[in-house]
Image (cartoon, rainbow, N blue to C red):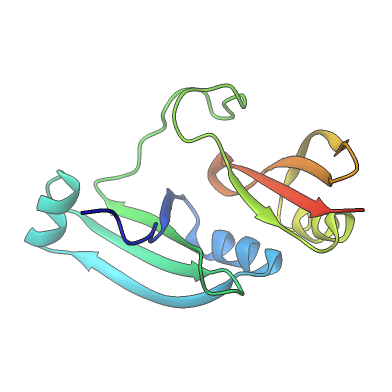
Length: 146
């Protein structure tokens, strides 16, 4: 039996509203919001007393989803330095294909995004960059050129 698809990637954030605004500005669509709590949630994540809120974001093509999660109880905990470098073990980044990388960076900066390094060109194929987004996650952008 093979997997059917990758359903979503979950990111824990401290400000759900700001994270939704950031990813909406990027071009994702809010698919839905929910409160998550109860015995089933405790068992699923392996914590007691889970009470959280989630927002499911969908890419415009409908194939990619990002679950933004705000834990009310137990409180979220920091994992290492507040702004880990790109070579930190674990989830590295989330990458999105965009039409106009410069416009996207400008719009995301209004939501607190910080450019890591600079926009660089890979051969005659892509312009690429990494931004630090909500909760310190690295969001990569790729614009096809040529």
